[in-house]
Structure formats: structure tokens, C-alpha cells
Amino acid sequence: MLASGADDGTVRVWDPETGEAAGELLTGHTGPVNTVAFGTTLGGQLLLASGADDRTVRIWDPTTGETVGEPLTGHTDWVRAGAFGTGPDGLLILATSGADRAVLVWRLLAAPQTT
Image 1 (cartoon, rainbow, N blue to C red):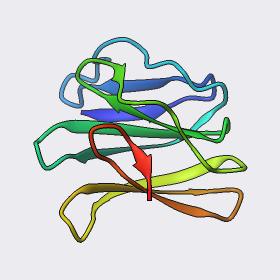
Image 2: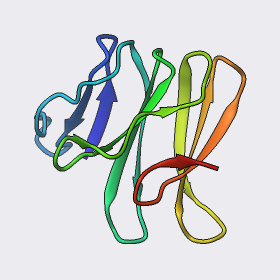
Image 3: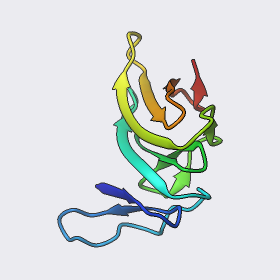
Image 4: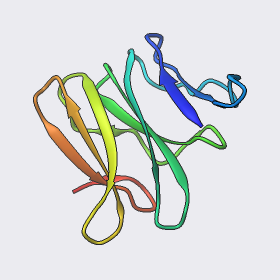
């Protein structure tokens, strides 16, 4: 899978072998999407994060197109970048940075929350 964000606030998941869209547009952001990133939980669930000018980060299940939890809020300006990693406890974490010059680290459990 590949993903892309657009100026209209949507995220699209793609099949890289066919070049075709995989599923429907993911909607929810109210500003241009600047970053997308994939990560996998310890349980093997694939997640997709998107960050946008609306100062939110959304977590998606890219196979169903459904959001996972509520939007992550905390940035006071545009979200510019995001990357998944693994915390010292083995759990999935997401780091995001914004035009607010902040880097926020989110621990992704059953429902996303900040640390």
C-alpha cells in the first residue's frame, strides 16, 4: 500500500502494483494534508497516520478506511511531518512535528493518546 495526502483535506490509499486507488477517499481533515505514514502495531494491525493544516493528526485503518479513535490534537499550527517508531516498551509510537516548532510523541494503544 501507498498513501498520499491532498490539498482538499483527503487521503488516498493506493495499490502500488496496479497504480489504482484502494478503497474510498479518506475524509475528515479540514485543511491540506501535509504528511502520511504507515505503522504496524505489535498485534500486526496496519495503521495510517495523516497530519494537516487543521492542526490535527488522524489515525486510519487503511484496509477499511475507518478512523481509529478521535483526532489527535495538541499542535497549535500546521502539522508538517509524522513518522512511526517503536517505544522502549515495544508499543507503536508516532512522532509529529508542526509549524508550531513542536514535536509531539503519541503512544498508540487501543485508542490513541498522548504521552
